View 1: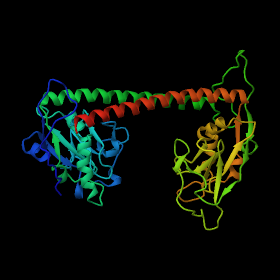
View 2 (view 1 turned 90 degrees about the horizontal axis):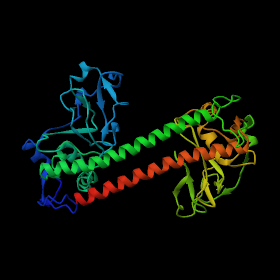
View 3 (view 1 turned 90 degrees about the vertical axis):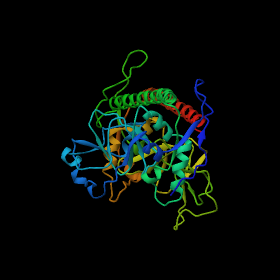
View 4 (view 1 turned 180 degrees about the vertical axis):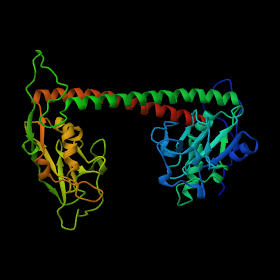
Length: 426
């Protein structure tokens, strides 16, 4: 399958002012023929493909596209093979400074391999490009792989096939802009600085999230009846009252309101981060279920929760999006009484140790964990008085605000980089 590209050169809209010449568009195969790219192989190992029982905790890294994070290969969670087994591979043997491209299943992520190891092994999901660094800057080539022009080329291939992959033979038909080495180096250095800024922001966000997790562990009792490690003081320096043990049922009020049709109100669904609109409205007047029980209505400010996969257990959310939304009848709806702040209860249920242990016990077979409101109501939790609840909520909200600010900076920097790429590689 040949990718048709009529343009033979590219004149970037944005470039460093000392460079004037147009960039020739050169096929990857031509770069291979001219030894600009020294080697180009994927991890298609055929009969040598390793079995699960062959992987070990130590040994030579076996890299998949999932190990490409922020343009780098992260070795922390990658699989490994004994050295004797790794030496059997003839293809997909990547080395330091190789450019890696995810070509199978998840197509598009890229990374530069930085390692002190003699080599690593690539899985079937990845291809390496080994550059002659005197002719082709590897960071520049990785930047090309991120450009809209290159994405269009491999997207065109995937659109003509039922497979979500870009075979290595097709990759060699793609064209890349090939400016002089000094211009490549200048582009790579500039965009690498932007990447470094993004990486620093991600590290800052990760540290804030780690800090919040550590604080949470100290703010909430490890077991029911225990005092938390970290307590706030009253403005006069005195202690707040001890936390009291309460059944969830004594803190909440069930809300039982049905909607027969799914287009009556916006449909809400859950995620790791909160309630969101699955769709503003469904089309037509479809009835929710055969028994005509309809949907549960979630008024603004009211809780619902979703049965999640086992790693998440459950996710509690408050509807802050609309006056009334709807969820499946599998998801109970309730509000809080005057004993507990709704945001505090949300934090307690989503992050508290007691609920997580309790929820796991509710597993009723299959791949999902189920729990009814009647069971949740019997869970005993410890809560402080309302004033201390509000202090805890405000404290944690302050950390969340900082995390969100960093997330905004990450998105803005990524948008800035995308704009640069669009103007450089039109």
